[in-house]
Length: 603
Image (tube, rainbow, N blue to C red):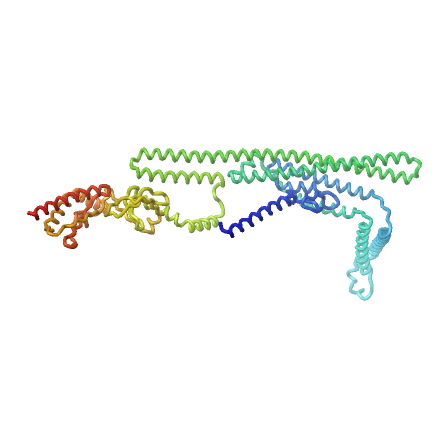
């Protein structure tokens, strides 16, 4: 690793560490329910409701509803939506009651706005009365005489003007009431707007809600036939269980908050009742106001009791829903264990089937080379079948994305073209005209004995020159099997592994060469007669020739001048396995002939 690589690795490690630290510090934003994020500062702000009225119970139920899968979960989702909607409606009612019960002393700008609102309300009332009067005066046939009265005013024109004035005054009244609400802190208008929006959302949700009852949990879980689908659903159930746990936690917090509000308002109501009982001598108008205030407080307490009961029911419902998801979690785990059992069974059966087939074919075939070839084929076939079965259990049968699969296959073909060609070449080598372990071959100029033929490679034990000693060099040479398709290879081994060999002999000066050459030829023919005959018959059978072959296995003797004597080269056919013995036998015969010729020359 050079200096640049070290610097790059160090920078990458630093970035990874910083990103991990930053992810840990910002983990508070990864809330499953998006409306739980607070409006305060910081990553882990305390959640606060949006708007004046807290609508989180309904938002929680609405968020969880689309996640329901089974019939049991759908029932829980519908019940949660009903309870949450009721609780939010009661919250709006409580807020409106409290806003109406509040008494405020208006001063300054708020007092001036109140007076302006009163004036505009009176003006709007007068406009409405005028419109009613003009409507009564307008004759039904006013449209028929509109052309004749176009130059003068008519009751219809006055009515249009009055309606336009009413619209203008109503707009001004609404604007003034908004200004008064902001100045005095009266939120009844804002609460009413939120209630209207909530009702519209409920109506839209009910229209979009599905009417399907779904399937039971066990039946619904049966839809996931593959291990990949089961694992995906298992993780989805885990996330759903966390969401429901968050919703339960939120409902418990709301129960605690409502209980605290109820205790506070109960204490205030009891204090107000005691105060009203001690003020028996006050005027009737004061007593009426006090009694009305007490009635409003009791009404608010009743609404709080209803809300508290709804929240407690929501807590119990989320607990039951979570238990149901936990049960479905166990069902999915059971199915995953079944799929894993099936995969392990397939692997075991694949191993046993490969072993059984190898034992069977080993007993049928006695040829060592054939057994090795069959063993390789059986191992490869059983492993491929086992892998396909395992992939079917994990992913299921392919149904979609044929184009992507085609492109992926084309890309893999380009990348692994050498290995694919080598695999196809292996079938060629296993054919009738291929090679076997033990054959003497020459591949890409390298000769040797075949020691192993794999699916992708052929291994040779390299030997020296064929016509020299022919001993192994000790080197093991490997070739991709693609040479069987786009290359050239020579196989010197037939059934008898016949090959041409030669010996060189120097005839010294003074020896009659021609008679000696004739005798050496006769000795070579006699020594290799049986082998030559067998070689010719086998070559004829291999080449499917009829009649006499076009080549002969008869030994030949070539004579070459060399210095003061003559060199002769004797070529003959022999088997590769006994070529050294044949060579030694011929050398012995030649030496005897040469010694006899020398004795004759000496006499």
